[in-house]
Amino acid sequence: MLFHTFLLRLIVTTSFVLLLVMLLQNTPFSHAFCNPWRMGNVNQSIGGSILIRSDEGKLIQRKISYRSPANSCNIMQSSSNDIGDDNDLLNDKNDCNHNSPVSKCPLSMTFSRYRIDLSSGKDDPSGPGSGLRSGASLFSGLKASIDRSTLERKYGKQLVWIDDELEKRLHRDRDKNSKRQLKAEIGVHVSAIFWRAVSDLADCNAKKGSDMTRIHDEHEDDSTLVLAFPDASHMCLRRLVDIVNWLEEQTLQAERRQDVTAKRIVDNYPSFSSDHPMSLDGDVPILANGWCAIHAKIDEDAPVSTVILARSKVKSLTTSNCNSNINLPTAETTEARTKAWVDRVLVKMGICPFTKSTTKSGQGLNDVGVPVGRIAYHYSKASTGQISSLMADTWEAISDMITAGPSGKKGISSILLAAPQYDTNFSLWAGPIFATLEATVCAAAAEPIVGVVCFHPNYATPDGNSWPGFGHMHSVPRLRKWIQEEDEEFSSTLTDEEVAAGGAFQRRTPHATINVLRAEQLEAAENRRITGNLYCTNIRTFSQVGFRNLNGDLEKERNLICP
Image (cartoon, rainbow, N blue to C red; front, side, top):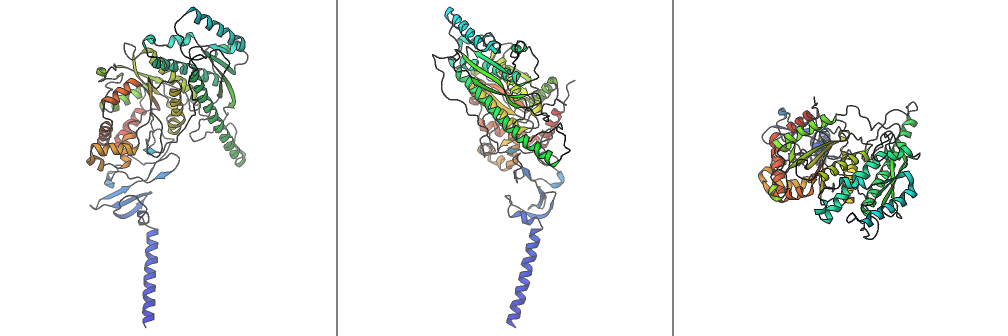
């Protein structure tokens, strides 16, 4: 009898446990144990989201948000709102459609780090490229003439002697500048000339007659260009060569990858047409149609700093469609959209305390020696397969800013350069593009005079798991720390996703944008403001406006058409 009673109890207990396991496997409870949130009473699961009932009895929806464009997902908590309000963080669905103009997520991500190894060392004071010649003496003029004749005999019509061009770009008050600043100014101008030469040579369809391609009109071999810089730093040119060759290697890797992809498509789909438009996702740049990679090297035996640029064997594939100008907004429309964003975010919302209008910036810093200057709006139509063209447009804009000076009628305080063709590829923009920009600043030794800042329609705040490089928003953990220190009560109301959104929307512009600031303005602003307080204030402002409203306003600016 006892045995039968024990057996009956065992059967009942086992059945109950099995039933409980089955229920857990088919209900949202199974997700609760691996969830980082403090869960309430789970009611049901809909559309991949989780509905729970809070202690107050309200239905709360928990969404899934992605943290990396590489399809690596992380469950993050959105705002706790009544489900009837439909008040998702960014409206609609927090999906990661990177083909849409403004991706709803990620709001934070782990940045891939691109490292360009630059040559180290210093210029030999007695060798070529020791810097700007001291004074216009008879001896220096004679030496320059002899050096030029030597190189002309060696390279013929392939040689471009960069002397008058550099002299025109140097700031009018260069004699008053410190040696370090003068070297930086020369580096900026050399970089502008260098990148334009690389861009012109890379474009196999470039029109003859431009400053850097004019020699090709008279020379059968237009695949090589030799630039001689009598006033340039030898180390500056050597590092610029490092950057160009890094881009060549990246392009070579992309070509190999695309060749493999194309072969797989043809093998699996024999009817696939070879001239069918095909593109490759990822950070690696693909050359645009009619473009080729450039290989660069230094002429070590030349009497002045001399670089040889040659078209690489790496050329664009006819299937690439990344140079399409379809639906590309005009320069006027792009400027109008950027100005609308500046007016809404920087001026009216006060996100930048030193920008009070859409035309000038630097207000409030005059007492520390920073004059109010003009905001220069620039536009680049370079495609994602024309990185050298984007670099040329950017460094020519920086060169113009340095030449104009910070004050006066033509003085320029900062630059906003928009490149609409990069709008849907934040990984490329934040990765290789800004790595190339950062490396060029270093090559030019321009850190004492300029700084670059990254903006993009899909900007995501660094999640703190990697170093994104200079020019990016502070990480989510650092922003959280500052908010906690400034206002603990406010911090307790914010989820990490909202902190990430508060950082991201400070950098989300209508188009992919490079912001260039003068270093002295950056330094003065850092000394004037309390960084933690500023970011806490900005995130509080965005929180009050609402992230859904911020996203909607950005969409309106992106759709603005200049009459």
